Length: 190
Image 1: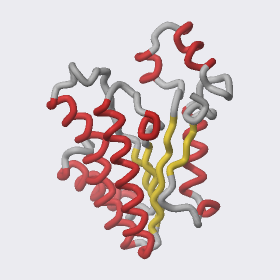
Image 2 (image 1 turned 120 degrees about the horizontal axis):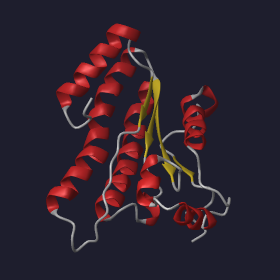
Image 3 (image 1 turned 30 degrees about the vertical axis):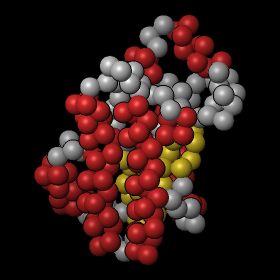
C-alpha cells in the first residue's frame, strides 16, 4: 500500500484483519530520500519526502493502534535513521522527516502505553542495502564508508532485523519510546 494514502492503508489493514486477525506487531519501514543541498531543494521535493517518511508513519500508526487496542496491546517499531541525530541522508528534507519520526514515536509511546502498546524506533546507519549501493556505486566508496565505522564494516539488513525482533519481543517489554542506534558506533565517533 502507498502509506501516504489513507484509503490504501485502511484497505491493507482490513485485508490483514480478514486474513490473519488484528495485528499486534508492526514494523514500519517505508521511507525514501533524494540528494539535495538546501539551495537546490524544491518545496515539492521537501513535501514528498516528509509525506512518505513522516505522514505515512502517522497514517499507518493510526490504523495499527486501533487494531492493537482491539487485541489489548502490541508493539510497534519504526525504522528511522541516525540522520535524525547527525544530519545527512541526502539532505535537510530527509533528516528533518526522520527527526520528526522520533518525535512521533515518543508521543505515541506516551499516548499508547496505557493501552499496552509499546512504540520504539530503530536508527540505522551505513547499512549495506540497495539504497546505500545506489548512493555509493563503487565498491571502493563503500570501503571508505565502512572504514568510518568503528565496527570496521557496513551493517547488514540482518543487524537491523535482529534489533527489530528484540524490540517487538517480550524481552523488551519495559522498553518504550526509545531510539536504538544500529550503526556500528558511527554516530558518536565522528
